[in-house]
Length: 89
Image 1 (cartoon, rainbow, N blue to C red):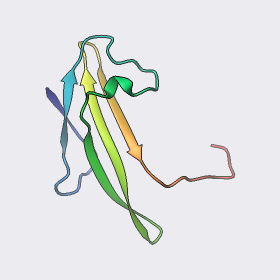
Image 2 (image 1 turned 120 degrees about the vertical axis):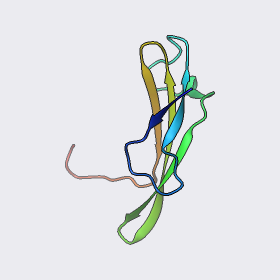
Image 3 (image 1 turned 180 degrees about the horizontal axis):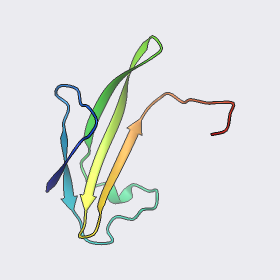
Image 4 (image 1 turned 180 degrees about the vertical axis):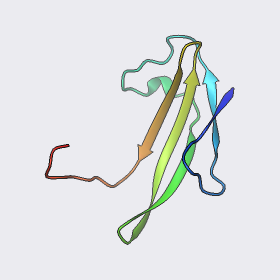
């Protein structure tokens, strides 16, 4: 297994690398579904943030696979804040 470094600043005790497993070609499909990743253990990061006066924690799960041609990353973000704007983005 290989390892990739995180470019974002990590809190003390947070992992700065995660495992990246070799898969056969055409195992990972870019289709918006995450079922091909069920056997890949995530690296879980917790980021402490402050929205206004209320401190909160943002959760991020990182999964990585590679084949002979590509590196595949699945990044899942768990956030309970939904921002809405009157203006279309």
